[in-house]
Structures are given as C-alpha cells and as structure tokens.
Image 1 (cartoon, helix red, strand yellow):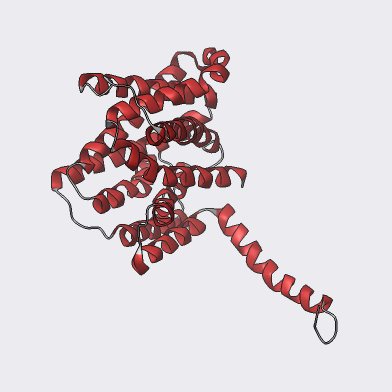
Image 2 (tube, rainbow, N blue to C red):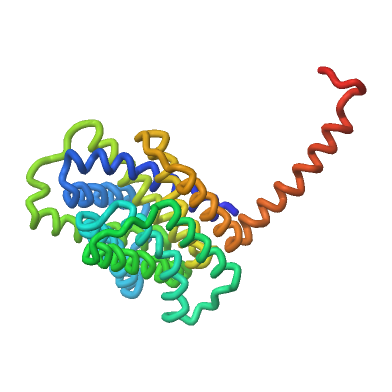
Length: 306
C-alpha cells in the first residue's frame, strides 16, 4: 500500500508540472530547461548517493546508463513529436505505454500477465482515448511520439529487473546523470545554454521538476518496483494524464467536458481492476460504509436532535 500511494503522489506531481513546464518553456529554451532540470536532479541525489555508488559495480553502472539514455530519448522524441502533431494525439499516444509495457515484459522476460491486468490495460486505453479526444495529428509526429512511448515502456520494464539487483539511490543517480549529460549535449549544440534562466516562473518550474518530478519521482519508481510489477506501475502512471487534466482545470482554466471526466473515471476503474491493493482498499471502504451507518443509527439518541 505505501508503494502504491507513493506512485500516485508521483503522478500527481507530474500532473501539476504540466502547467509549470508549459509556462516556463514559453520563456526559456526547452532543451536548456531539460539540461538544467536534470542537473538539479543530479545535485539533489549526489550527496546521499556518493557512498553507495561502489555497490553498483560495472553492471549497475551500465544499467543506470541504459535507464538514463531511455529517459532522455523518451523526453526528446516526445518533444520533437509534439512540435509536429496535436497535443491531444500526443497525450493519447504517450499513454499507450500501458499497453507496450506488458508486451515488452512478455516478449523480453516471459513475464506472465494476469487477465485482470490486461483488463485494466484495456480500460486505461479507453479512458485515455476519451480524455484526449484522439484528434488526428501528422503521421511523422505521431510516429516520433510512439517511439517515445516505446522508450518509456522499456524504461519501466528494465527498472523492474534492475530494482531488485542494485541500490535504488545509486541507480537513480546514474540515471539522472546520464539524462543530464544527454540533454546538456543537445542544448549546447542548439545554443540553448547561452543565457542563464531567470525569473520566478522558470526557476520555480526548474526546482519543482528537478527535485520532485525527477530526482525523487524516479527514486520512488525504482523503490516501488521492488514491490509492484511493471504492468501495474504503467497503469498507475496513466493517472498522470488524469492529474494533468485536473490541475489544468484548477490552475490554467482548462475544461475537460463530460467525455474527459468520463475518461478519468474509466482509467481509475482500470487501475482498481488491475491493482489488488487498490481493489482491496475500495472493497474495505465499501464494507465499512454500511457498518458506520448502522453504528450511527444505533448511537443516535431517540427522537434525533443534537
């Protein structure tokens, strides 16, 4: 249960940063922003991770390099795809990692996926389609976003394999370091680090995304995947789209409409179906509700009143 709640909190943080990042990159170049974001993430983990790095060994360092490269690739491809296609198409295709994650797990490691998990995946895809509207974009842009989604799904699957073998803090630090180096290289090549970021909007977004949405979020993911399968992680991560809609509604004046809210509900049902812990909590809450009502009626004084 703690792992599940921690992951839901991570998706909520990612959801709220959609609004922050959108405002920040309208002012500061995107790849320069990403380079500094992951530099902050790396600095956040550096001190506690330093004494643990020796535990990784060569295999752990290679694992962290692979995860960081996949992470940077996913962000870069999604960004380039978004420039060529629609926002709603990007949102839906990105959410398809809930399908690709179990497929990769099955193909690469012969991981058995239960019927409940597949049912949850199917509902999540339906919910994502309802939430995004699935407006058609350009084929080239959509393919770039799909490649980004594949990189994200592969990262989730590999984290499940590596989480049990290597120290979570050291592994996450190497992942952030590799992503930082990759984005710094792109940003320098494009001349996007020629000027330093300034202003409350940009620095606020950099600090929140660097510390909470990157360093702590991916550390929590690595820790949680010792306890939760990659397929269920992907399903919980689909809540990112839901939280993005909620915070967009609350902070940016976005309006989802009945179809969007219905999509949020369908995604939630899919997670409850596939995640036994969430389902048990829901069943317990349902069982307790009539019991509490009976207790209130029993404890109430005759004739009512205060």
